Image (cartoon, rainbow, N blue to C red; front, side, top):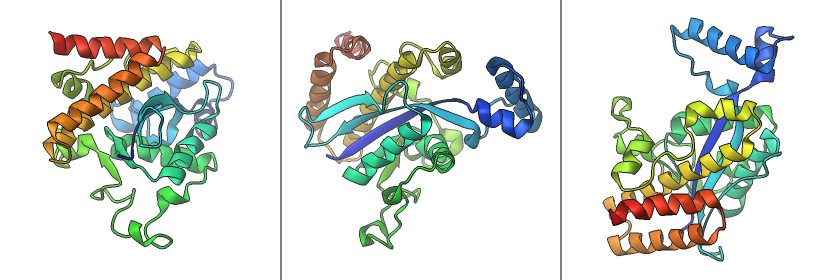
Length: 264
């Protein structure tokens, strides 16, 4: 298996907002408030910023690959002090090196478009990701860009039958499958954590979110006949070994919450 499950966390691009909307002189907090107010005016009440105005502050992954010593690993790319461009370049460098199957929850609708815009702004180089068959014929009919190709599986999109009104929250699907769901914080708290300088907390939260996505993915592989139930259980045992051996408190807590639900 060569799979990279990914999730990103973002905050408003404060410097970009100042430049676009003439907000020089405002504090970070006031700049964010002004950006959200302008977005409400533009959208008729919605605060969610357009994709290009999201600054990436964390990218977490679960990587399942036979060349890994443990077979599977969860971590956040770069370091807490890495720039946005460095984080995004790390992500696309992984695709360049391994050409994994990408797996996400709403990656087609949010994560990847954000990475497209922010990668462009930060001069990130990602030829393997943008390949459509001119340089590698295998990508002509199976690439990362086509919604219905297999190099990227957006689980939310697939499970909803590509119908937006059937989309479901990751937290609820994960919980229904016996996974822990949200832990530590939720997406609405990321901005306050970032303003408070708690990048480590955001990275921990993103890692537990991507673990939920990986758990759902393993169940989906059984559902689609790509794994037998026993093979899925072996993958889960492999992951459990990594979590308990990581020495990371939040990964151990995820493992304990997950196994505790199954024991109940």
